Image (cartoon, rainbow, N blue to C red; front, top):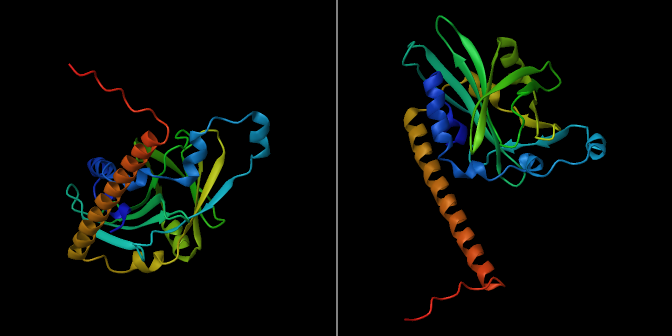
Amino acid sequence: MSFATRIASLGGTCGLATALALLASAPAFAQAQKPAAPAAQPAKPAAQQQQQSGPTVVQVKAEPSQPEWTKVCGKDQNSNAEICYTTRDFVSDQGQPVLALAVYDVKGQQPQKVVRFVMPLGLLLQPGLRFAVDQGQATAGRYVMCLPNGCFAEAQVKDDFIASLKKGANLNVSVQNQVGREITFAVPAAGFAKAFDGPPIDPKVLEEQQKKLQEELQKKSEEMRQKMLQSSGAAGQDGQPAAPQAPKQ
């Protein structure tokens, strides 16, 4: 099951806290994120920044293990209102996780629609983010909270935005890295309308997919740990002096 499906919550502030707690359990998301890499580098001279003042467009693609958008529905424990969210994960050309997206449809006496993102690290928080369908009018979003593995951002939207996303080709998400350079993630919207208007995933199927995902994450984490241990051992043999042994008594 998608990473976004595991972290997306059906509740308000308490639900967000739960989602953030789940976010910390996904080590794969911390590996990165190619678009965020410039933020980790030292700031370049002003002249170079001016030469590179144009925005960087990053094309992302759907997570291969999630063949289509996933719709999940449930009841809010406080208001008893039905809440559905349609979600998908997106990765780089190298298959590395970049961002996750969930579009919420809250029904009941106070219906509302909310878009939530999980964004990579290395971005300026103060400007927030902006997102627009293709060349449409941009909507401003704000960051809610960050953990070592990523940051949550969200914004309320109206029905006309949902209608545009159903018909659009891309959702363009614009942010700024730590040197103030604009980065736009071009997120493909194909298949969103079918999932948003269609039936939700069966809870039993969702549970099985979540279990499978957790097993895959644990396997990848162990493989990564083994590679780090092997690299560390190789470095010790290729030129690093061995630690001196204590003299025998």
